[in-house]
Image (cartoon, rainbow, N blue to C red; front, top):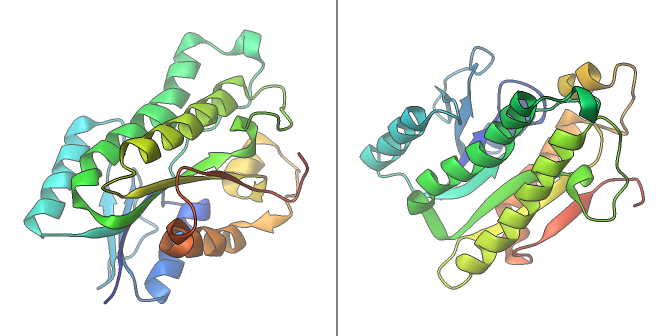
Length: 225
């Protein structure tokens, strides 16, 4: 039986690669993004314009899942906002903007979708090496990396809260990946992996990783630490 996935942040980069790869493998995919022009609607691909910071959008999406009696096998929380700016130049509004997407938006869609996720399903949060305790930190990423640290702790907390009835919760803390977002933030930086390569790893982990892990924050990086 074909699996059903929900992926956020799918207009470009890793998220876009994930949904195209998932459809190619025969999975039904609800591809969520604020911009869906790059996502063709097909029998398996269902692009939906959803703003994770808008509760009405999330309620409408949840209502759609209920009306179609959808059972979700995996939610991949890939959407994220990025900021590279010195701390003294980072305003309260800047922090709020980053946290609104990376933490509050992620928490909100997870809360709305949990009733539709199979008990043996998987919620996979895409985090960052910058949010890991003890990892290398970089100037300018105070808002972004701290928000990913919050995602990591939230992942651990939810895995504990739902460990008896499911689903499983894990996070992948990614290192540098060659995406449009990386190029915008760090012009000229060349990452060791491209979006398609990382998308393949993430998709495979979303489908089967929870058979081996729950409540884990797993680094996916060629660098140490």
